[in-house]
Image (cartoon, rainbow, N blue to C red):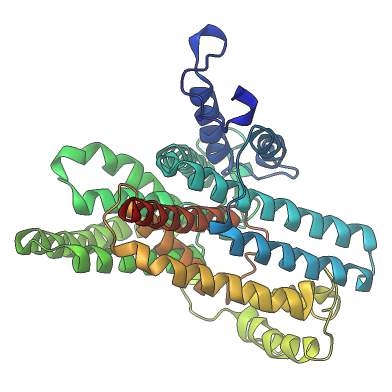
Length: 417
């Protein structure tokens, strides 16, 4: 069989120049993709240009579309199709078409990540490492920007909030949650003393999330940590280790309060925290605020099966939807809105059985599940439609789902033989 008919990593003995194997090169390109996902301050971002090329190359070299993640492919195609059908309703055809084209591209990235993991689930380590390295660097840049630690550092802030290398602090904060969870989970399951080096990147990530002053990011972190902690308690059978988890839980709470007290001792931080910590802001409860727009928006889409058209909602109201489920109907019509709901909850439910199976990637799967579930809740109050890392989560989730299905098929075949 020729090299081109194999996916990257399929030909372990193949050699590239300077003695690098094709597998090593492929894994390196995947690591870089995960790393670049944290740099989207300008559009088109390096991540988008790189992923467009990478996806073509990998699929051309034999990366497979598998029926095990077929539901993701079908749902993404129908979701984008709903958007295409809604484009003629938009006043600005060019901008509307570009918006849906970006949706189509992001759908391809989700399918790409699903195919990558279904082909070799051990690649989760590469993605995890690249994402974590990116998040720590991005968080450090956001912190430096907030405190203006070098000339021009304020470029990495917005409205006196850290945004790092993102356009919006509300995207910057949630992006940092998955690697934060992965580190916390490792500390929960392994010796803290042997992993003291992880406390430094953990502190950087937590401080970055805090300085984003994003209520959504805080909520995502809180919900995801609760899910991970609950799963750790439920799946731990050893009473002694379960007692250790309880102790670490109390210790973690005390540590968070201590760090919060230190941060709030800085006047500028304390003032912004007091402002952002209010549950309902003025723009939430105003006459045409966020919550009022939800009710009025759903009333409008009930009368428009094809939706209102991409980028049209803010022509009727002062701001955008700030709700991805509402946006599903306004931008992608009844078809797209309904398919998105189906895809979101199908993904969530399909992952549940994987959380309690003993696999090398179970801890990673649990973290992806926790942060994905938290993002679905966050999506009720914010528009996550074009968040690059949200599509990454869909791809990772279905990659793990497909891996489990393939493993069960393999075991069934061996039993039958």
